[in-house]
Image (cartoon, rainbow, N blue to C red; front, side):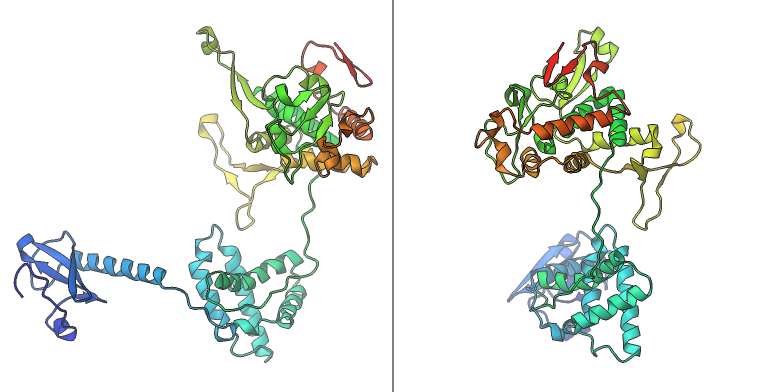
Length: 460
């Protein structure tokens, strides 16, 4: 073979017999004029080559060059496999075990918590063995074999073991998962519909009591960095407003004449309507002096900053209140652990998570990692449930919540004196119930202004 040439056409077995190192369609060839081992392959009738950057002439290529060739071949195989279109197969021709193994390797293995699927797959395999021993399992077990009758048998088998409906539903998800994944990736031409277990428990939406709300308000009021959470809570519970609408509220353009217009002047109504809601007496002192964006993160600056003629306050617009609200829940739980506003976090296996001691703070023992129970949306559900129990007409609740057009101003009903009268009375009853546990919802408690509430008028 002349120097500087890749040797023309490959000779197949003859070349291999001559001692050339090959992997698939690639082989190594030493380029003497550059002291470099090249990876070579045929592109039609043309031989292509790529440098490995590894020198050292000898009868056989060095191990480093062989490793480089192996990496090149592996990468080429992966690309070829990715470019090859999947060929859909009939469900009766696909073994469930093979499909499940592929799903576990190519999909589940890359999930954050694959263990929960793996455990359910093992339970399913135990069930298949149980049915096979009783000669009740179709053989071979293909995707087409999964019928409602077989799923019903699995549900009965798991129920007899004492498994709950949510647990059985999770196991069935491990049966449905590989089939859905195969359909999505064009591995199957069709798929059976996998039923779920009846009686699967739906999560009950959380609702806070007036005492719990009082603890949340106290925790927010006590922290200068959480004043925006306090105001957000007051507006939310007083208006039944949507979280995003409250966070976007601009006092200059959306609060006037005793009303809050949650829809901005330049906006169009969407499916999630934004209502016009009267300002109840308890909320009025909190919003009547607002300017600009209502919900703003605001904390005092340091003495050093103020001494250098810097600003007295640091302010930042609030687009998301979830983290700050979580901090308030944890603070409320620390002050009133009996109210159940937080719990210890669990890992993927359901085991409690413990945090290592903070040595700089003098801690010597581990502490539980806590998470709040509830979210800003829990406020909306709380006041919604309260109004229903107070007997507020459904039309008024829907109007304030943005569930109907009545509260959007389309027909000017918000200008009537009786607009949402029962809704406002119910809201004030809620604040009265909160007042049995705190007075942090009353503005006069927070500043030197004395507010006397007489009907719907406010005197200062």
